[in-house]
Image 1 (cartoon, rainbow, N blue to C red):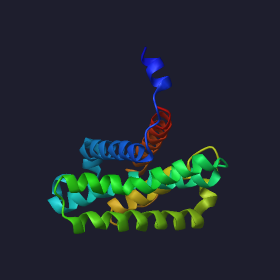
Image 2 (cartoon, one colour; image 1 turned 30 degrees about the vertical axis):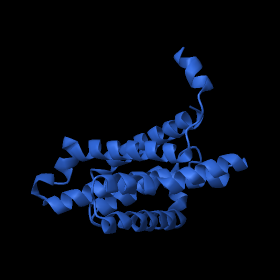
Image 3 (cartoon, rainbow, N blue to C red; image 1 turned 120 degrees about the vertical axis):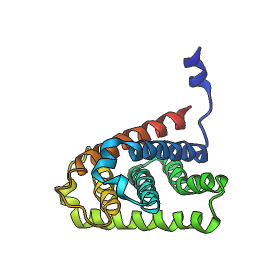
Length: 193
């Protein structure tokens, strides 16, 4: 019966899919933020609350940038116009879904508005990184944005003090990879159910 219900149910709106992805990113970010190894690597107990909050925000923006850039790529590569519109609409609603959630938690409007600028800034930065280092991401079967956002996100978490030898990079790359898989599943499931 459940299969029949899923088969005949209507797809969710792009706004609903974006909200679902936003919740997924927020949950994955919170889970990573709470991981013992992650905190140990960052000497978390020695950081003040403002720095801890900044790290959480960097996790969220890394996840949102990964989702945004992945959908941007799929949109560009897709030859089906209706699919292009769907990915564009989901992509364009990601940040507003997060901002709406922040506003519902009584976060000041000025702080919420900064999220639009932050996501745009990170996406532009990661596009430039890809242009400059695309030969390092030559496997066409993999989502290049996983590696780019992992390196860039960790760089921001470490306040520019990360290197290719950073002990946290493999773990952070796996986290971005898992997030990418979960985002793709969410898009596929919510676009069809």
